[in-house]
Amino acid sequence: MKFFEKVSDADTERSLSRKMTPPFVTLVSVEPEIQYVALRNINLIVQKRPPNEIKVFFCKSNDPIYVKMDNLEIIIRLVSERNIEQVLLEFKESATEVNVEFVRRSVRAIGRCAVKLERAAEKCINVLLELIQTKMNYIVQEAINVIILANVQNVFLSMKVYCLL
Image (cartoon, rainbow, N blue to C red):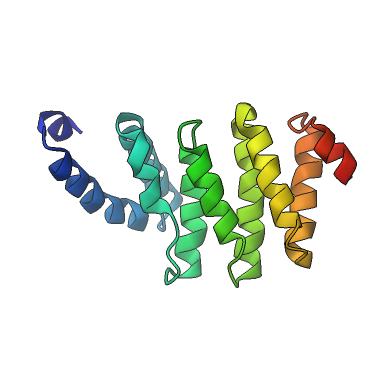
């Protein structure tokens, strides 16, 4: 991080950031102690460079499922009010994947974002309502579960939820 402070060229900085990401992603897939250290470092990097760093954790279609699952967790940890819209688009897209468990986790991740960022709760519920419109059973089930759980936690108090329930 100290080296980043001395880099003045934005392209070099971006290039270095891209090179640092894969090792951290790899470290998140090992023992819990190492995961913790990697995530702490990721959090430090994102605090210094928040706008663009979260995109590197967005899932690629050819990523193995275990990488996608880890990326979801990292994204949830890194979501902020500055990047919530990008994250919600990513989770909405992830909810259309083939793997049912990954889809369920993606829908749950939207609810976790709402709990974490109360000011973004309305955006989150709108995405959940859009997902319910897909009428895919497992997506609808998970979205309703998330809405009910969040409602119990007093996050979603909008009329949309009460009409839905």
